[in-house]
Length: 226
View (cartoon, rainbow, N blue to C red):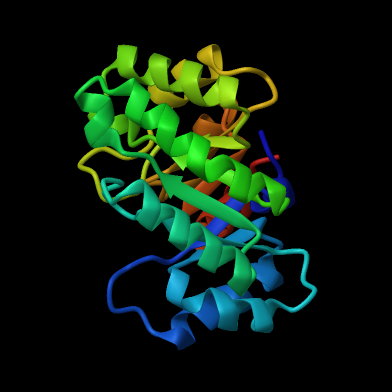
């Protein structure tokens, strides 16, 4: 079991709902600092003010690219990446084109990544690719792990939180089985309890994307999960 402090260090404190306010994003940053979270994840519009608000905090600043459906043009995703980097993001959670996955167009996906990776890595930023595991077959998940693992992304991430199925223990375990050891896993989508968070970490995730981080920590403290 993870202690509450250890658990906090795995959490990307996330708020990506349509219509959220700047005040919500800044509050997210304050909460992440207070609770020792790994990162905050906010919409691209709020990267610059959140960068200013976080200052030199240990909390990383993440944003999303091609969110939530992933089928925007590669050129559009590239422009989003460049703007996020200029605005001060540390980590970019990139939704891959899972429409291409479903159509077995792996050449498109490789080309997409080949355009984005140099820009992100040459800026010394972290790239997390979101594959939307809940809409994929086990075979498609395995192929994603082969492609993105070989490319050397920092994380493969399960979900956007907008599909009907979010993170599952089974998907995380399958990803861990087929990814190289140096590629980490971020589980996200539907993580609401300390128990489920612990199961995902045990299955192989090292980051958890959730808007329920404070509630999860409160549960962990109450349950004495050490």
